[in-house]
Image (cartoon, rainbow, N blue to C red; front, side):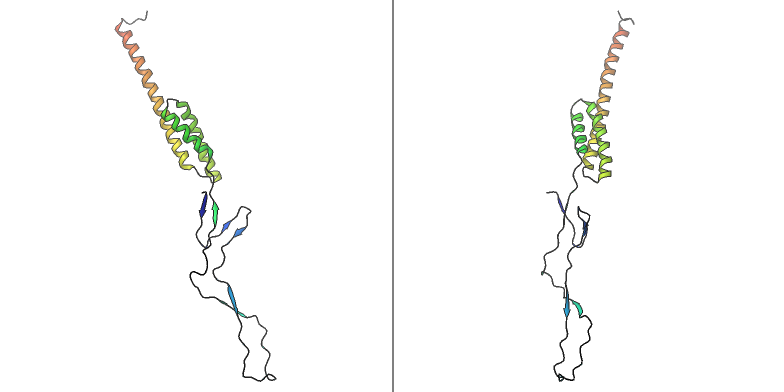
Length: 165
């Protein structure tokens, strides 16, 4: 379900730009005073022609259902999902170049989320962390791997008289 319940009493702007407010809790009630009964009909003065006074009904609980306004949740940014998936793949496998692409997608996703107000910032941050860590780990791993090979070759050359034949 991609809906959120807003608290009672809030207003929101719909998709067409019109503002909607929740219904009032009480409707105003008009109160009229009856004409005096004890005065004879010919001597009665006409009633003043002012509008009747409005009196609010007393507050009673349970006479109305609460007003609930549902607002559609923002969509999740697709670039953040791609950044997370690429970060996971590069972290698990030795494809560190996917981590570089994951870093690019993660930064794109963060800028789009800020601009558009979408969800998925946590996934983008997780994708960035995984991508950065995997790139650092695998680049470090391959440097150490080839460094050890270079040291073994250098040691073999040094032990063999210093010339390569």
